[in-house]
Length: 328
Image 1: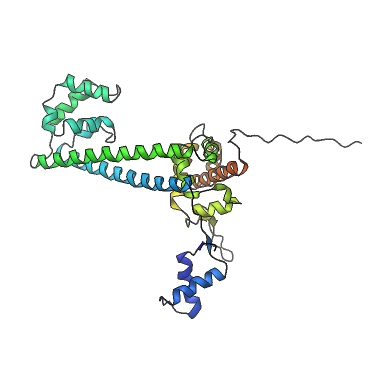
Image 2: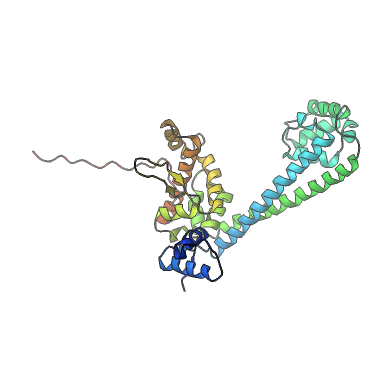
C-alpha cells in the first residue's frame, strides 16, 4: 500500500463542490478525502528513516529546549529588574555566564553592595575573560548601594531567581547532550559531509535539514524539495493585472527557519552567496525578498551536491568552450 497525505485545506475547499453545502459530517469527510485521492491531488509522504528520523527527534527536542531557555532568560531579566533595575547598566548581556555567576553567588543588591571591589573585580575579570574588571565592579557596587529597586519581599524573588538559574543549567546541559548526539549521528550519514563542505553551514543546521527532509536523493527535481519547504513560488494574476510572486509557505516551517539562519551566514562578507545577494539588492529587490531568494538558492545547492555526490566547490567556473574557426 502506498501511503499518501491529504492537505486539510484541500478537503475544506472541495467539500462544497460535492453537494454545494458547507456542511461537515463524519460521513462526508471520507468521501471528500477519497475524491481528492482519486483525482490525483494527494501529497506524497516524506518519512525520515533510521538516523534521519533520529535527527528529526533530536532537532525537535533542541527547538523545545531552546524555547524553554529563552523563556527562563526573560523571567530572570524581569525579576532582576524588580530588585536591581540598574544591574543592566554594567552588565548589558543577560545571557552571559558572568551575569549568571554573579546572580547565583550574590543574588540581592544588599549582597553585592557589601562586597569589596577588588574581590568582585577579580571574579568578573576571570569569568568574562578580561572584558570586565575592577572599574566595572566598583560601578556595580555603587549602583547596588543606591538602587531604587523594591525592598519588600526580596527573599521570595531571590528564591525564584535561584530556581530559574538552576533550571537554566539543566536546560543547557540537555541542549549540549542533544548537540553531541547530532554530531555523532551525522558521522553515520554519508551525505552530511558533503553538505558540511558548504561554508556557513554548521552541524545544527545540517542535522535539522536532514532530519526534516530525510533522504535528499529521493527528490528528483528541485521544485519538489522547494514545495516540501514551502519555498515554491506562486502568483495571483487576472487579465491585465500581474500578481506579485510570493512563496506559498505550505511546507515545513522548520526547514524555512533553518534556511533563514543559514542564509544570514552565507550572505555575510566573503560568504558563498554574498555577491548573489548584493546583485539582487542592486536590482532594487527588498532585503527580505533577497534573503528568501538566497534561501531557495542555498536549498538548490544542497540538493545538487547530494544528487551529484560531490563536495561544494567555491568560485566554481565553467570552462570556456574552444571556438574552432571554419576553413575559408
